Image (tube, rainbow, N blue to C red):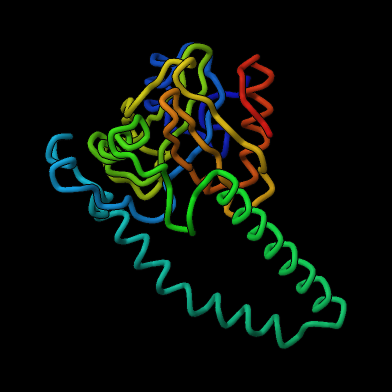
Length: 239
């Protein structure tokens, strides 16, 4: 079984210690997020749930510096890409077109998958019932963790979401992690019918019939994650 954070990157020592305390045995983990913005719930529903934040926390100073540096480097990268394009050989162009066709195919697979799950368009991330388990999870999505990314943990008796206590440019390097939500295995199923789509999606389907689509930022990490889940004799429905 992999250590925490090996899918896709190592966690800080303190975060690893906290996760080991919360989840003995280092169960499989993978980074996830919700695609786009959380829909705005009815005012009364939001108020009844405590009126928590529905957007990520503001970037901290370090994150702002990283973003600023990226903006400075971006024009240089674009110029390098343009130069490579101008120097392409016929074989290079054929390889690039094949790669573009493969990405388009993965995108079409992702669209078909969302349609199969009942999602209408690219914006729908849950079944739409704010009173359901998925809706209630979204209402508290940023209450304890202002970061967009969470670590999905599949333990023997529960499925959980954990994340940094504070906004971090690199969540895997955050010092402190906090348990955001957890569900007994009998109350939620992890569905992964097509891991070769782009974006790569997994779905949490709850016992009350509600569901939430999670996006995996690192598509390459999903297959090892599911392999580790199966190796740990976890139940993961793959259709």
